[in-house]
Length: 171
Image 1 (tube, one colour):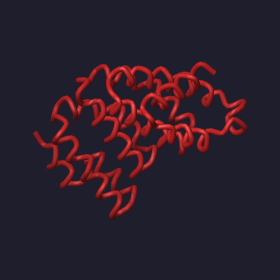
Image 2: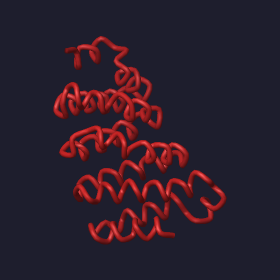
Image 3: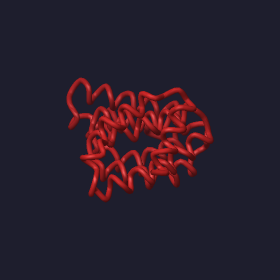
C-alpha cells in the first residue's frame, strides 16, 4: 500500500496520471494477487522511482516508462530490473540517467526482454567508455535494425555480431 501511495504521489506531482492508468491496466489487482514478483515489484519500483524523482522529472518519467515497458511483458523481469537499476544508476553520472533509461526502454521495446541483460551489464559500460552521444547513436542503429529486419537482427546487432556493429563502437 505504501508503494502504491508513493507512485500515486509522484505521478500527481509530475502531472502524469496516465502512468497510473497504464499501471492499473498492466497490473490489475486480480491478476497480481498471489504473485510474489508482482508484490516485490511494487515495493522495489517505488524505491527506484522515489530515487529517480529526487534527480529530475525527466529521470522519473524515463524510469517509469522503462518499468511499464518491461512490466507489460513479464512481472519477474520487471522486478529483477527494478532491483538492479539503483546500483547501476549510481555508477553513472546523474546527467546521463534519463538518456540511459530511455535507451534501455528503446532497446526493450524494439528487441524484447532479451535486451535486459545487455542493458544492465554492457550498456552502462558503453556509456562510460564511449559517452552518451556515441552510445545513443549505437542504440538508435540497433532500434532501426530491429524495426527494419526484426528483433533477432536487432539482437545480433546489439551483441555486435555483425561487422557494421563492430565498427560502430570500435575504439
